[in-house]
Length: 504
Image (cartoon, rainbow, N blue to C red; front, side, top):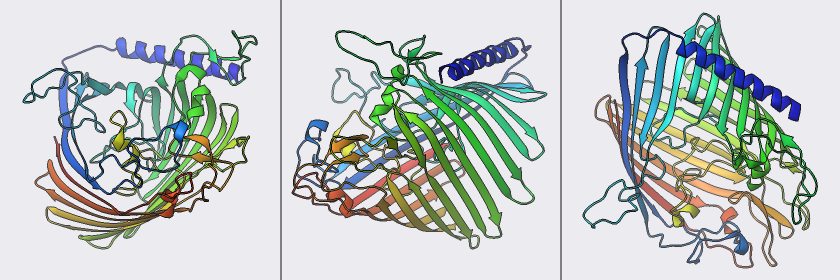
C-alpha cells in the first residue's frame, strides 16, 4: 500500500513537471480571446416539507431518525443568483488556456444574502462573497495526443461519479487539479491521468490505515502513507465511439487514495468515517446505443477497497431510455440504484461498507433527490445537496416541444435499499453514521414516496430561457421513522420555481 502510493506520487510529480516544461517552453504569439458565459437567476417556494413539530434541527446527540424540523415551512422561500464567465485564450494552434470564473455560487448565492457587513437596509452588496475560479487549465496539442494541465472539468458517462455536463442548472460540477493525456487511435480514445482534489493538512506522509494507540500521547507508531495527506485519483479511461454504428462503449478505472488528514469525506458513501483515510478501486462501465427512435444509455460503477479499516465493496448503476416519437413528442425512462448500509446488532458495526451516493447533479426529480429539506433550517448548508443514496428509483417522463415552448410531465417512484430495524443500530444515510435504535421505535418502511412534476420552458431566442417548475411529492412511510414511539406525520410537499438563464 505505502510503496504503491509513493510510486504513484513520484510518477505524478514527474508528469506534472514535464507538462509544465512543455507549456513554458512553447513560443508565444499574438493571443486570441474567446468569451462564453452564463447568467442565471431563480426563485424557489416549498410548502409542507416538514414532517414533525420540532422547532430546531436535530443533532447527533438527540437523533430523531428522518425527522425534518418544521422551522416555519409555510413556505420556505429562497432565491439564487449566479454568474459565470468562461474566457479562453488561444495562445497558438497548439495551446489554449481555459478558465471558468464564478461570481456567487450555484447552490448558495441567494438574493439578499452573503453581505455579512453593516449596511443600511436599502443597500445590498457582496460583502465577503468571493469571486472564484472554478477551473483554469491549459490544453496542449502534441503529436501523441492532447495534454491537459490545471484545474479542469471531470465528466464520465451519465454523470454518476464525475459530472460536469453543464446542464441548465447544475450546482456541483466535478473538477480536479489534473495532468491528463488524451490520445485517439481510430475509434478509440485512451485517457490516462492523475487528479488531485485537496492537499490536506501536511505535505509529508500522513497517517495510514493502521490504528494508533492513544493516551497522553502516541505510544505506538502509526503507519504512514507517502506523498502528503491529500486525496488523489490515478485514472485510466478507454472509450470506443463508432459513429456509423452509433455506439459508445467505455470503461474508467480509478484508484483513489486519501490520507487520514485529508479531511475529505468519501464522496460515494457520504460517510463521516471517511475522514480517517481510504483507498479503493473503482471500475466505471458506460455504454450508449442509438437504434432508430430509441437511445439507450447505462453506467455501472463497481467499488472495492477500504475506508477507515472497513472493507468497502459496492455496486451502483443507472440506465436511461429515450424514444423520440416525432419532432414534437419524446418519452424518457430513467431508473437506477444506489446501495445503502445494513443494520447491525448493538455493540457492533458492519465490517463491510456498501453505501453509495450518486453525484448530486444527477437529479431524477424536481423535489426528491434535489432539495435537502433538513438543510432548509441550516443556513450554512446547501438546500440543494441531496444525492441519490440508499435508493432504487424509476421515473417516466413525457416531453412535448413546439416552436419556442417545451413541456415536460414526469412521474417518479422510489424505495429504500436498506432500512432501520426495531432494535440494534441503523445507518442514517443523512448523517452518514450508525445510530442506536431507541426503545419503542418501529421498524422502518422502504417506501420513499411518489412524485409528480411539470416543467414549462420558453426559449426567447438561442440565448435566453425562461422556466417554470411545479412538483408534488407524496412522502412514503420511510420518513415516518422518528427513532421513537411516535411516528413522524408526513404530508404532501408542493414545490414551485421560476428561473431565468442567459447563455452567451
